[in-house]
Amino acid sequence: MSVQEEMKKRRTFAIISHPDAGKTTLTEKFLLYGNLIRNAGTVKGKKSGKFATSDWMDIEKKRGISVTSSVMNFEYEGLHINILDTPGHEDFSEDTYRTLTAVDSVIMILDGTKGIEAQTLKLFKVCKMRGIPIFTFINKLDREGKDPFDLLKEIEEELGIQTYAMNWPVGMGKRFQGVFDRENDQFIHFSGNEEETRIPNADLENHTELVENEEFQTAYEELELLDEAGEEFDMEAVQEGELTPVYFGSALAPFGVQTFFESFISMAPQPFPRKASGELISPDKEEFSGFIFKIQANMNPAHRDRVAFVRVCSGKFERGMKVTLDRTGKSIKIAQTQQFIASSRETLEEAYAGDIIGIYDPNVYRIGDTLVEGSESFHYEELPQFPPELFKKVTVKNVMKSKQFKKGIEQLVQEGAIQLFRGVRNEEYIIGAVGQLQYDVFEYRMQNEYNVEVMFESIGERLPRWLKEEQVDKSLFDERSLLVKDREENYLALFKNEFSLRWFQDKNADIELIDLFDVNQYSQ
Ligand code: G4P
Image (cartoon, rainbow, N blue to C red; front, side):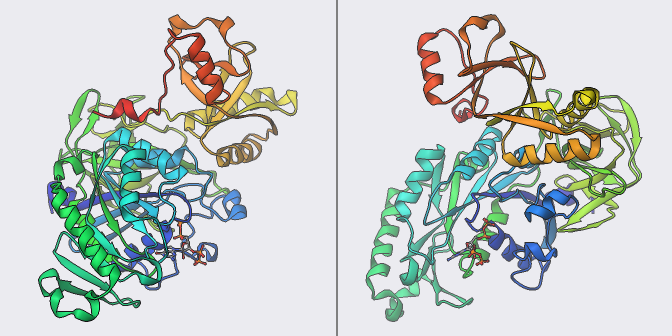
């Protein structure tokens, strides 16, 4: 098969959700369709180790969660599906965000009883920033949840994205009877077991036993309302991430999952051209290229090896090939590779645009690096800086170890494990993270890899706002608006809360406060 044909088969996506919305349950169903697992419950059995993303780090073992995201792939009806997992635990890390830069589309799961929750919102913002297609699955219809119209409204208002209901639920909770499948003009009946009966809408009048009840009649009227509202399904808007197709169902039942999956993969995009050094690089370009979005250290503590995760963006990757690392211009032969099939890692011989490969990292790669076949050189512009939310001052316990402390921090920062800021007044080290987990990993690695014990002093959750250098007047800032510099020597203020931010802004209306995560700045 040619590079072009292989690329067209790829569907690379991530599932985003708030913990407990049903990501594991839904992923498990997908893996069943792909024959990757035989029994339901395999993924869920995280602690059994079978599907544990990794037991590479003690810290993961201790906490029973995965520190890093994993990758799963399988064939489905001629397509090659790559699912990138994003840690479902509350204290995720920047890796979760970065994973979203390596996918071409996203499934957003909402718990129908709760609607949009904090973690979904954060992850959604990254997707919106990238303008990638987002498909929504509203889960747990077998429970009494929010009104479907209200859920659509919530998505539109809180996320600033249009919705299109692909199906419409009949009842919910104990009275859940199925969904109208708007794509195929049929009613899919939920009988409580795994079988789904499909009845064309035109035949429904012959099924009085199904239609003669209040919920059915109400849903039918709502469906007519939706149809009359006459909003056309706009595929272009989906592809630009401006409209999300919404599906109702239950991952656990399971109900509506296979229809959703099939509809999703029929619309989910194949790899698209990506920007590199100001140009668009097409995924069907013959030469291999890709970028590193994650580095997993200490996979095998005995060897201290590291694996760099590469998103293939063009061409064909073959084991043993020579590539150029754009940052250094050096040529590297890639001999040790891995593909990730859930927890097992196998040597990978070839890969195409859309795939994720793991390459052995003898400590030469950094997050954000681009690899290109041959001597050509360009740089993928994929990895923005994500604004941290938590900040801690960090010091070394034993001052005799200051040298190792600095070296350790420098390396972990380069690797993207944490973000480093320096206080403008006294040069103190302030570490920013998006989740507590990053501090735990940092502390663990400083101790285990650099033999340094660190001490933290939390300065709590902060709202970071970047500043223009010419507008910085140091006397305006205090503890509630801590002035620091990032690695690139840019100034930013860490505001204690919304109140101190507004107070500052009111007093200094001419100072521009830049929010890296302002979704509105990405809307067209
Ligand atoms: P997560 O990965 O997003 O964190 O969620 P997960 O799939 O683990 O699901 C969280 C809980 O919600 C699980 O229950 C799961 O069984 C349940 N769940 C998932 N989908 C549905 C659904 O469609 N309907 C209902 N009613 N429940 C659903 P748990 O009690 O926490 O775990 P378990 O003991 O059932 O495994």
